[in-house]
Image (tube, rainbow, N blue to C red; front, side, top):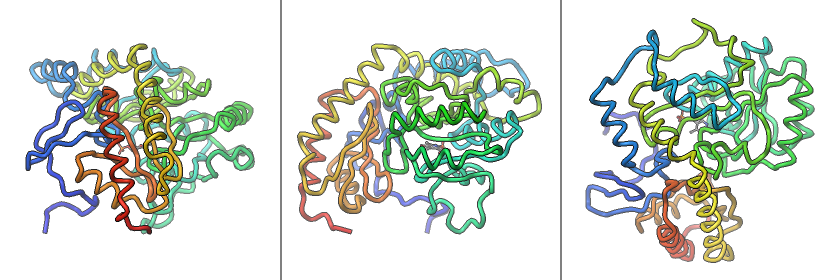
Length: 385
Ligand SMILES: *Cc1c(COP(=O)(O)O)cnc(C)c1O
């Protein structure tokens, strides 16, 4: 018996210590980390620049309420808006809260109540964002979802056009569905989405909780598509492991979130802001993003060469350092075998192995990971289910 709720199915691993791309367990075994938490440790574990800013902040103060001015929040907000279409930021402590803020803002600013999201999407676990999530398994057992949300097949512009009506406040989407299986939005679909939204005065909310902060080789993944979202949400990789969330929105939406309209006690916590500042100063540099793009190409190329032809692999997809390997069987045994061999990976749905290495990963580490993947995926013992 454990004193914890059994909400997570846990692998048999206890971390003792972690640094960069390496995690060490309590038995002294080390692992190459190609999950980075779940895309959280964007600059690797305990990046020195982040650690330094955190230590400085630890010695100054840990909390200040949002009743007072906060220059570190201003700095991070300035960086987030400089590298996106947004003009101001609301800070909170997680992805689900950032999306919750986006949903409330869209409804308040438009005076309309309907929000369209997509099948296989994932937007979080609060009652609101669970409703935004287009996956039956997330809803099961919780009774009727909020009526606000309507789900449409991803990459289906006809279905989207049919769903939009006079009550539609916003369309909410991930540019690459992360939890849903690494499904990449088609370029044409996004152009049509932007067009139908503009014509119907419907806001675009892009959930960049997993895809943002350089993960795909751009500050935010929507920037591959040339669109201008009204609202962008961020979290996971934003503070290299310190809990944080952010909702970034355009100037036109500023006054809808006036004093008293929304808030979060822990939002913009100084420790989180110190870490986020260090992350953004690193991750948004042009040559850093270029490296992510090149390493992403390299990883994809090596994967295609080493495992692309294996009978167990049905497709390999991704952008930058966000990659899914579709398999013709349930991947839980494979993920477990990879962990035993010393490579931490994730899954995304039952049939996809998901790779989200820290953005600082080296080519040598990519080679090592690809070798381990090859070893495990050629192992005939993996059960088909
Ligand atoms: C993880 C995730 C969330 C939820 O973030 P939490 O910090 O767990 O609340 C929302 N949207 C996407 C796309 C995610 O990947």
